[in-house]
Image (tube, rainbow, N blue to C red; front, side):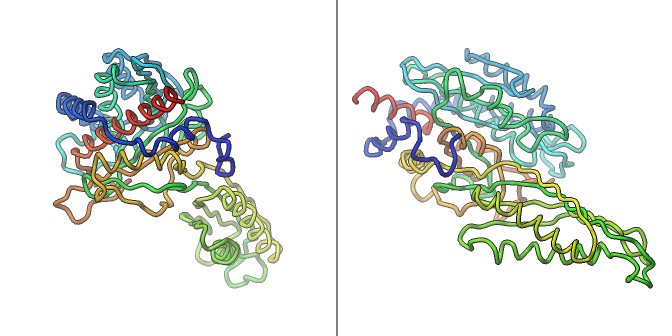
Length: 433
């Protein structure tokens, strides 16, 4: 497994990338072709995005979305596989020249949110909305496939387009997402040597941001059940007050981050749900707490789990009460491999201009793209979708989230150049070494 502590064992291709930094430049002829192909497919891409937005589907239920994507990819003459990780679609574009295979992943699922925008193509599915921009992600990936298919005679190697279900999390009792895609062989046959991805963000249109190393956090969930003893509210000494214990647990858990962890290695523990008690004059016998843990390192991810249970155990047992503690590990931190990032930065600057490429502090939100980064070198960036005429816009996961569609074409252009240059420089090193 490719982890944060095993970077000395990186695939040889990353070392090739690092050696070719000085050679990085956008080939003018392919650059012109990319622009022409984007213009050629613009109307179809917009039409497809709006159709996907109008017909959102939840995690592991992306049946019609999957059919649409597969049909579009098949029409390009790509080798297409369906029903991977339930509804996933994978398409292989084979360049006319030999080389390695690089991957590009886009997620497909929507959220259980009732859309409140006024766009004419708003969701037709009650209570379901593409409020995290996955419709934009799919449109960028489809557009990239369209453009790169027309340039395959310039491509040395292969591009594997990965359309992944259930990024937002599989339904209870089901597998799904990136981990299941990997389990079912998406990175194999041919083996993917590096992978790219993006996520929309309320940044100004035309800008992107990234960071080398950790860029997004891990995401774990926990449930704490405090088991006390009920009594009359006038006689609390005859019971064991679960609410009082819960209050102490909540406050004490916050000191895990502030007093037990390295302040330079960020972590967040948030309790978002509390349930307990049955009546105002009855001491509660049980309280249930639910929350999330976010970290930027696997070390903290492991350490926090044990510290939390020790805290809950100490408080409840001091009252003569009991507890139950459930902790579910989720995605790991998204990690941009430093050498791969280094070789891609000149491409970003050339395509967008240095002033439109920013470095961002790691974000404590999560993305299961991290599963790919644990296996192979990955590069992930944030794509600006805020209209320049607006000072603010609704955030991700909001029923009012309305990204600027022009961002799709920025994303396509950037991703085409990243994929093309990644393969170009690998081929150059292999051919001259």
